[in-house]
Picture 1 (spheres, rainbow, N blue to C red):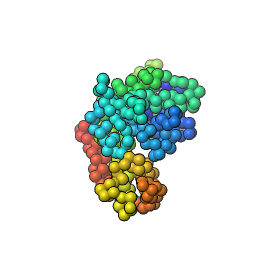
Picture 2: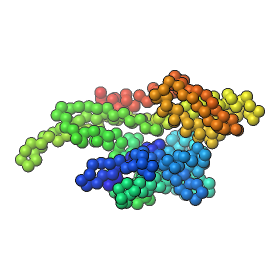
Picture 3: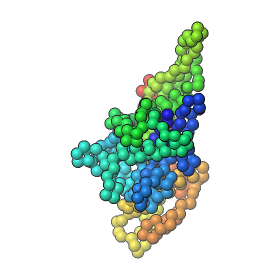
Picture 4: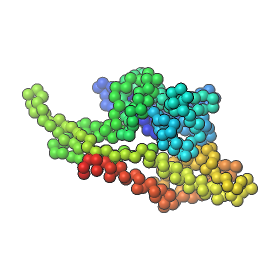
Amino acid sequence: MIGLDFGSDTMKVALVAPGAPLEIVTNFQSKRKTPTAVTFYRGERMFGADSMALITRKPDLSFARIYRVLGKSIGNPSVEQMKKDYFPYEIYANETTGSTCIKQEETYYTPEELMAMMMQHAKDMTANYGGKQIKDCVITVPAHFTQHERRALYSAADIANLRVLSLIEENTAAALHYGIDRVFEQPKTILYYNMGASAVQVSVVTYNSYVTKEAGKNKTIGQFEVVGKGWDENIGGFNFDVKLAELLAERFNEVWSKKKSYIKGDKVQAHNGPMTRLRTQATKVKEVLSANPEFPVKIEQLWKDIDLSTKVSRAEFEEACADLFAMITAPIDAALANAGM
């Protein structure tokens, strides 16, 4: 069977076969992590890295962060936030069913259909890696997924001709993986902190063991219980990207306002094309600032044939994100309170 771990930004696929250890499937670029993005361009459908290579030039033909709108109504805050985060999608409610649809040129797609395409791509990757198509799967889901979102995931799997054996919560899967080869004779409590691109999830897990008879001998069996949870589905690593993109956008606006092409009151934030490029660049800058105190940023012809050339320091980035830091620790307090600890 395959294990599918979908995130807002990337996905990973695990292959489990009899007599073999769990393996992480490498994709067609020999990477273990695949961007959850699909692009329709000139009659071709592109996935993962191929899609991301085009997303800055053709943002209106590419879909990313599909997971965020899966199983959600048009009025859901996550769907509304997509528009504020400079995604150029036209999102509609289907007149008959009321479900969410995304328009690309003259074609309407449901998030389930787009998700099914990513699942089919995962199947193709696995076939390329392991030599055969596999239908059985286990899929991870975030703690905050509602019944609507879980049903939408089942629908997507059905379209992709996958049989879902089980859905398992992401942090519970991590807790299971950690404890599967360990036996704790005394109770041990561990806190799992999982910050993804669009959500923070925290679980408090207590490990223990019990003794049973096997072939007439005592055998100690490990077990665990999730005793507390906390999450925030509206904060993740992507929020830091957006903050940095907005910081870079303001730097560009300062330069643009001195040019002849500037129209009073206009801002680059009002234009999805350059903001998509800034958001993509912000992800790279964020990663570099994890290990360096500052980093030069240069983007040629960002907008109206004007270049952006600036330098961002880690201190400036952290100052811009000051309001996010309190939010990313709040789920820890909620999980501990939930566990009575």
